[in-house]
Length: 94
Image (cartoon, rainbow, N blue to C red; front, top):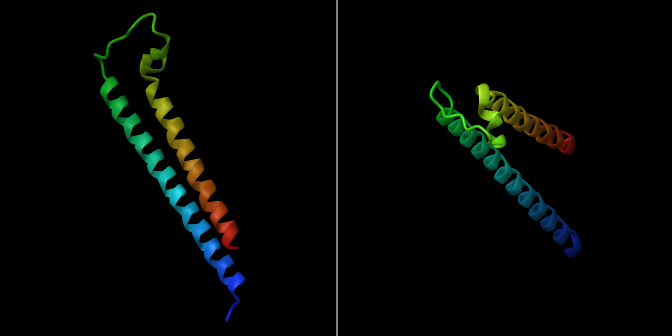
């Protein structure tokens, strides 16, 4: 059996582990929601009849169907985050 201080350390380590996992899961859900919302916006704005607003510099990303490049960038960033998290988890377990 462990003494009291060792038991407290074990419990605190488990609590930190579960909090970390919970925050990682929240971030993954947030990234997924961001990707789906970007897909929805891209679907709504793409096509031959979307309006072009001249003089609005924020809409330059949607001009000439550049939204696909933005979508690819977000998906690649999300994939890089997932790979980094998996690698750090692998290194921690090792």
